[in-house]
Image 1 (cartoon, helix red, strand yellow):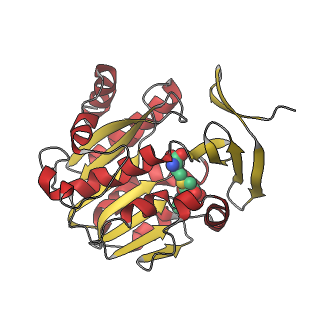
Image 2: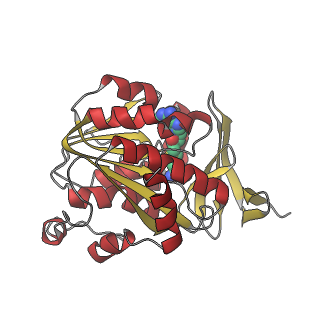
Length: 285
Ligand code: SAM
């Protein structure tokens, strides 16, 4: 019998993967959590039926959300990750010996539990001694931190359900406050392609522009996300993501990556014209 995972990317577009078997299914206080195994994409995690990561393409998302800011600020010591209970972002961060501490704030303990059990390829570094895990709402956690983190990575779900608060003006303003003098905030920034995602992306960009003096957007190709064209936000107090990038300094760290490299870092900030227009429209409003 055929078993397919299906996700509606729009009312008229569906994405599907043939599933070999289901490894986990649970309903937490916040969302439904499923983990499947497939021939094409290996194991994959969905929350409320939306794709979070697959074994085959998660390296693209996690490398781009971590190494872009770390290459601009390799001296970052104290890091906050909001969301990201699968552990992929933490895994990439722990590759930097200079990082002293990582706080991971994940609202849903069951995501961490299921990832540790069934997604060892992303959860492998959650036991690193530099990592502290807090099971809290990131929106509330950030209210009580000031001048503390060199880098904040918002590795959230989409702007509805538990993730909604992580796309608000209040949240971005509090992230600014929680950052140190040269701090950087990076967030998963949705897709520009389908109108509903593009609207969420523009709304987030407008709020970030109002909260940070430097606010840029970069892109990556992630096959299992809607349209495959995904954006990240880079917001910063002082450093520009391209002109303050020091190629030698990052390459000397000898971190081996599969997707990220310095020329790609620079190129990722060169956006298609229609995306530039969407961003400009909200910047001048
Ligand atoms: N790579 C993913 C993507 O963009 O599809 C994100 C993956 S990660 C699994 C997202 C995590 O954010 C989920 O585990 C979810 O429970 C967590 N999350 C959602 N809202 C949150 C909140 N308000 N505070 C902390 N964590 C939150």
